[in-house]
Length: 251
View 1 (cartoon, rainbow, N blue to C red):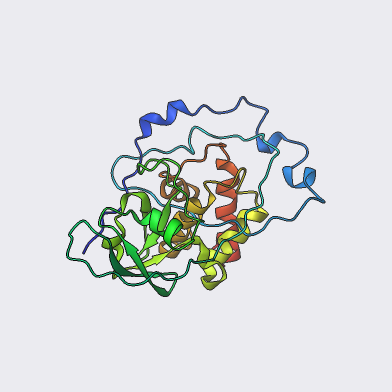
View 2: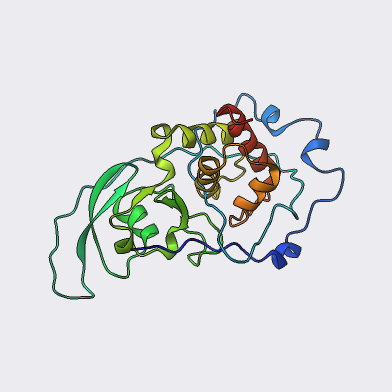
């Protein structure tokens, strides 16, 4: 059964995200955030990110051109899964039933309701908490996962419709060389500020680089235009994607 891909956001909303005044950008900062944080706990690989929605484009990168924050976050990948529940057989069309989901290359039997959304099943039933659910209305991209290689907002996909498809979350980590390279680049280039949106960005970047190993800056902005960074760390995010491209030999 086909699953609809995401829509891109409307570019008219760009005006709501103002750029920082000149002279306050990353390029004008004499000391980098990395230097200021030298000697602190080392960052772990940041997890997961989302792709461009089809439809109207909302490119937040064009408005957010500078970043002055000096904070960073250490995030660990949670690969734990909860014990498999006993199988359920029901004749109630609205009742729970057992479905098999292929996530990160493994099959998992989970009990879901017909109304259960994939993001909830991943987080609550499987313990894969890298996928976030900030808005729950397909507006921010933080819950992005790959389904059959394409980026989807998992808060808008029913879990039972994902059965029979391959699902990838950022927990795959070193199991996927592209995801691993992007996660490492995210740490090196300070792609994460608070880090909450990073899983969605990383998943979106994964879809981009697998389809286009040598993207331009315009390609990167377009592909990630469906993802929102509330910290406004877009310039570092672009740097992180470019570093991942170089590390993967696409530069």
